[in-house]
Image (cartoon, rainbow over all chains, first blue to last red; front, side):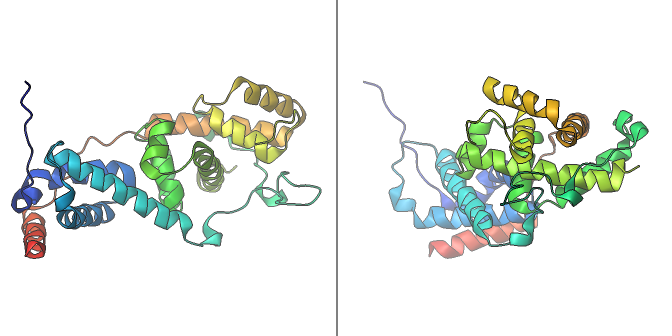
Amino acid sequence: MSEQVKHTLNPNNWVGAHSDYLFNYTITRVDNEELAKDIVQETFFSGLKAQHNFRGQASERTWLISILKRKIIDHYRKINSTKGKAEIKVNFYEDGDRKGSWLEERVPKMWDNEAEKNIENDELKNALNSCIDNLPEKYRMVFVMKNVQHYETEEICNELGITASNLWVIIHRARHQLRKCLEGNWFAK
Amino acid sequence: MSNKFFINCDEATAICNKNQYKEATLWEKIRLMMHLLICKKCGMYSKQNTTLTKACDKHLHKCEKEYKFSEKEKEVLQKKVTEKMK
């Protein structure tokens, strides 16, 4: 007979034992320190409320992580549903005969040849990062998870509670916005 | 996305973006190539998009920094948790 270890919860020691781990887990998903700290705190509070559901099969940390994952999805759902229609600029005609064609003012302009060849430039790094910072949060989170943290598409979808087609629409819009932003701030002729 | 052979610029750039992560399907890539043959604007987009990808690969890196709550923050947080236990 295999003896299973029965795990227990010890909230008096949660912060010391898990807060930094949960913080690091959260930051790679939400990309914002203050927000990550808030989410960790919320996780502990929810954990307290749900203590009676703990069956002792998983470790305390695994159990807290499962609550944390829920919190991240809730957060993403919240920012995903906020009606900020001015959030990101439209690039194409949305209806009529020309539906799906470039809007005049959004057509890519010729870039400076030298700048385009010189992508090693460190100042480009700053320009790129500030363009990413300017993305609305729901786009920034997905873009960062994909391009900085290199999460798999499926993983991002699971962690944020979105479908793959949602994800590609978000990436599509984020990249349009970044291209345009860099065109203005870096590659302009 | 529809299954038609000729796609518009919105659809073409969407495939182009997906393709930056090597996740476009063969059928998507074929339609993108067809579109790029006839559309200079999207051709420009596609070229610049490749540059954007290169810039991202070059300049964006996972931060290996260890994030930590300060001792003070931990103390406050544990106090809050303990409070709530009562």
